[in-house]
Amino acid sequence: NAGVTQTPKFRILKIGQSMTLQCTQDMNHNYMYWYRQDPGMGLKLIYYSVGAGITDKGEVPNGYNVSRSTTEDFPLRLELAAPSQTSVYFCASERQTNTGELFFGEGSRLTVL
Amino acid sequence: GENVEQHPSTLSVQEGDSAVIKCTYSDSASNYFPWYKQELGKRPQLIIDIRSNVGEKKDQRIAVTLNKTAKHFSLHITETQPEDSAVYFCAVSSSDYKLSFGAGTTVTVRA
Image (spheres, chains in turn brown, blue):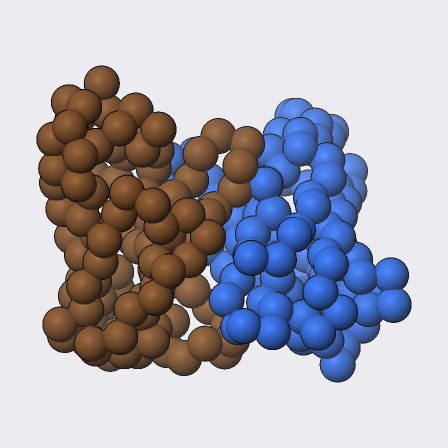
């Protein structure tokens, strides 16, 4: 199993550009999450999904969109990138909620200039 | 999300000494408390967790204690080694079953 795979690992965007962070998992997990990690701030939940076709907002959803057309894939879309979106983004999956381990991807470092 | 406070933000210990990190939470209905370790440039990984029906759990050199009355839980690392240097995050699963993370503690083990 590859686990949770995120792409790209690094990206530099100009203000106003758009991009999609890809996330895929091969563990047949129902629950998937997107977090952003800022220095000294821990991990903040952006969006999550409890299964294919179902998504919901987390703590900091503004400026982002997600979709979940399959169990495996959970892409995160940034529209009109802003400097405040400079961060490290982690995708994670879980077999079902509150069961234990979140499996994280390797992270995507995004810089908006 | 739930308010989770984690202290200290940085911790420097001599190799072989113990390290303790404490987290407090606000929702008395919270029932699951994991700890994640993130090495520099790596992904967070679960190292130990505890549920609300247990007061303490140990796994080799690490242990977690939970005080539900006071709404705090702590990570204890004994006989610290250089490979224990990392950022440690506590997390709390509250009534909506989503995890809220603390801000992290950077632990440095001095040789």
